[in-house]
Length: 363
Image 1 (cartoon, rainbow, N blue to C red):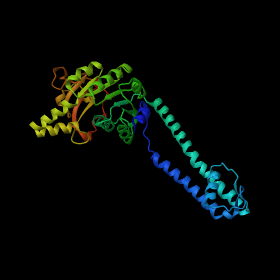
Image 2: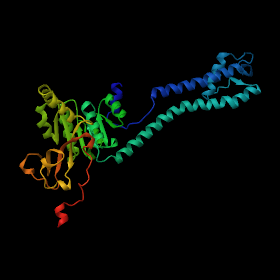
Image 3: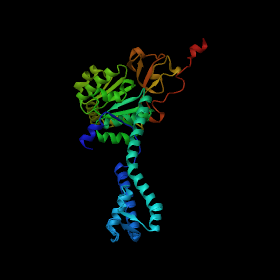
Image 4: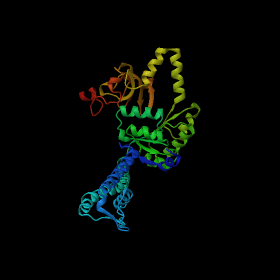
């Protein structure tokens, strides 16, 4: 894709669609039109004795005249210098050449009409998408980190239609469409691009740009457009963590430090590195998840639960499991646990909503 084409598509919403190659579609139409023209030329040439040249009645119609007549007839120009005069030639023109002329025009005009219809359908789809898009997740950047984030969201129950990707790259556009995602092609540091992605109504925004300065600008713009959305940002350098937090990010992940720490742990203890990699990967072995506190677990210690509790979230504050403030679990707590992947880490468990504790039932 050339730079001019990319520039024209910046800021546009592109919804995923399974469509044939436009180049092949155009070639197919040209071949059909050429086949109709060639057939008409052969038809006239074989029946050339039934035609005459009105500019010189003594001349016999030849191959060049047949090509000329077929071309002007199919294009409805019809100069009238070469005409059929025999009865059978006129009948052939009426019942064979006329339908060919209609087919020829349908192929040529149909290409234009299909382009207009496709644009109309795309505009209608985008308008309908804008009306329905609310409480969605915007992922800025569809590189390795962005794809992994989207994959984790989808595997944990987030609907694909509720995820919007923002990326200026045509390569990312193709990959996101292949994954069935809606894409806004453009620079996320521009507010207009973020508005097109529906950031003002987004539930969460995940920022995974390749540069920390772009991450800061994107975070500032997101926060200004939507003060209430939850913003998660990835930075390459640990020195920029506080800067991104001050820009408005709720959570900041240092990708280079995380990878470096995993490499260091793997070198010091291969088994520990394997466990950490297992926790960070999805779909096998162990998973880290956050879940509701069950009614029967109220009043217990975190260490006494079947799940391996590593933290307790109470009133928005994260406490380590050994923190004295959470030695007894209370209603409203949420648990960060390690559990087998087959337990569907984010799926709600029975007994977390609308039930009473044993003490309340006895009263």
